[in-house]
Image 1 (tube, rainbow, N blue to C red):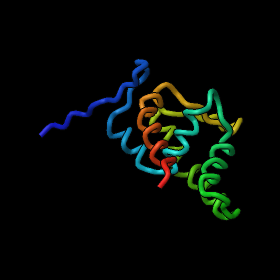
Image 2: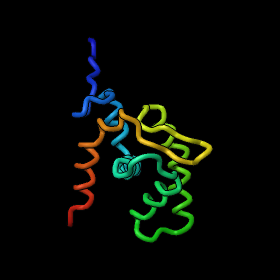
Image 3: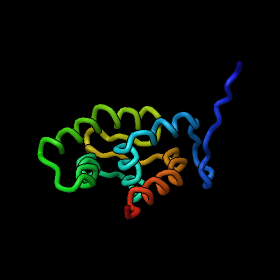
Image 4: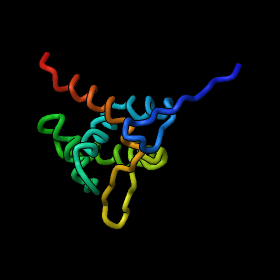
Length: 120
């Protein structure tokens, strides 16, 4: 049996991502939130700003929780985002920037963001 891997192409015709990669990237809530934050900013963003935004989503987290969020981002999410080609990492500057391939995620990020922001 052969499985065909379909690619997701953004409406602007930018780089594509395999469907499995799209689902993998969107599976984790923190990674979705980080990707959404990056989609709302133009250019490079400080990783500290990204992790602060992730912590802010939890209200007023403790210092330990903020550290845990930053550690998870650096060791789990950032490597995956780099490996899939959706972000460019500047180690010296401590910044990340969306790459063209990330545009394939935008419709799903918008949908997920609306769902999170919807009143219960």
